[in-house]
Amino acid sequence: MGEKPPERAANHVPERVYYGCYTRTTYGALKMECVVCHTSDQDSRLNKCPICFQLACDNCGFKAFGRVFCSRRCSDQFFFGDDEE
Image 1 (tube, rainbow, N blue to C red):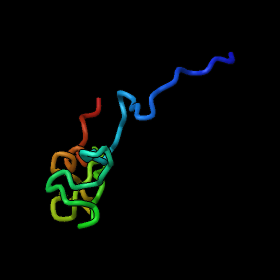
Image 2 (tube, helix red, strand yellow):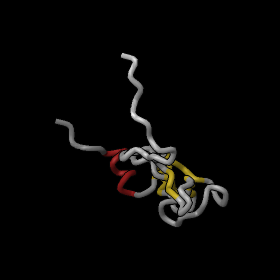
Image 3 (cartoon, one colour):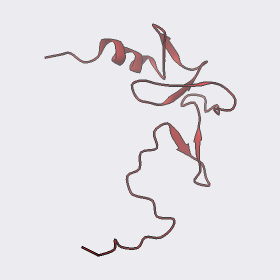
């Protein structure tokens, strides 16, 4: 009951970590960028795709019915979805 968990190194990273829309730099820092043109969030406005949660800038994003998606495939998945049984 009073046992301590095993000690881990300060730079230990779990095997499965979900970073979402962030990508890692060579120094291990996280940055936000467009998945198509790799434009930084400081250079243009980024929109998160409601299907896959990837980021797309205003120029690269696929616009449909007032929403911005990262691709036409995600747009079709959002509006048409899978066949219901």
